[in-house]
Length: 431
Image 1: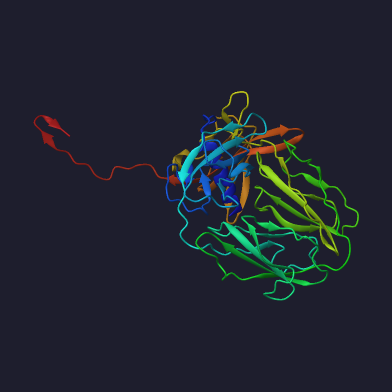
Image 2: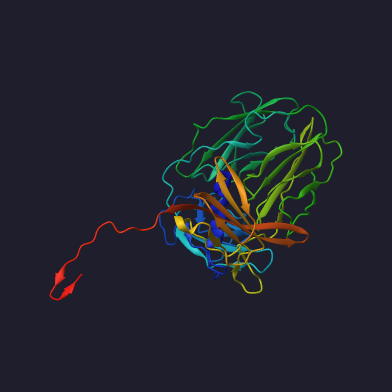
């Protein structure tokens, strides 16, 4: 499976032309001009090859940012507005193509109109502290997710299930977090109840959450990246991540994602040291890192997210000098099947397009045998083969291989023989 994924990714990169014109993406959902769009809708758009990432702004007029202001989303092509969308409103979406090696491109706004809310909101749940969490810092804030169609939330906090000893059904408005005026009690199970509401009504059917606070002590401070530093560009694909050591910390929770909202690379991995290798980042991508030190008194609070961008790699990527999309893969078109007559052995196949190196493999059961490292191969037998042609690229002291891969099969056939003839006369002619 790993080989297949690699092959398909490289093949797609090779079959594309070496240069494309720049296009702004169209909205996929909701499409431009759509009406009666649910206020909880996610917004998706066409992917643009070669960009480092996207920035999205959402407003109530073209180019405006009164709903979402210039939010980076990495290279994700879908975004869910954290507070939903206003009802019965024409909403304008402005996408900006983000590049670290050239100026960003701001695309024209695209618009759609939202629904009138006619039902009570859905449920929500705490995401921090998580349900069942232990050793929680007593100074923690309480955070929850957006409830579909909600325009506000009421929150209760108690030391008994269903109780409001600490906060009793407080109307917080359309926010997603609450910072208690005083610290929570030490070493106590806390029960939290969030009730979403809108103009139609409330949703009191949602279940509550609970977590347990830490014992007395002093939580550690936050840490920050040493390498790569926040905002760095041209970072290698397998960097040695280092961050500031924090006095009093027993360890660090590390979150790494290809978007600011999803730690899809590493989700809360625990490290007792303040450094680690990360292998095989994707090229031409922005990564987002949060480091949370912890000890017996809980996690550090308010630790901020940092980011850096990796080297351009093999591409495709936009050349800032030409404004065109460029690929560093070998530009090769090799067939998937080769037929050979029995009397033509050995039969030579050759790659005439340039590359820094070549590797030819023949399948042997579940293994492969390297049979040539030249631009040509003499074929003596049938079977399944694989061609690799590569260019070696060095950038800031780091070498990477940009490899084209093609699997192909070889089949023999005998000489053509005449098995039957038919002669007919038409006037003085015979056919």
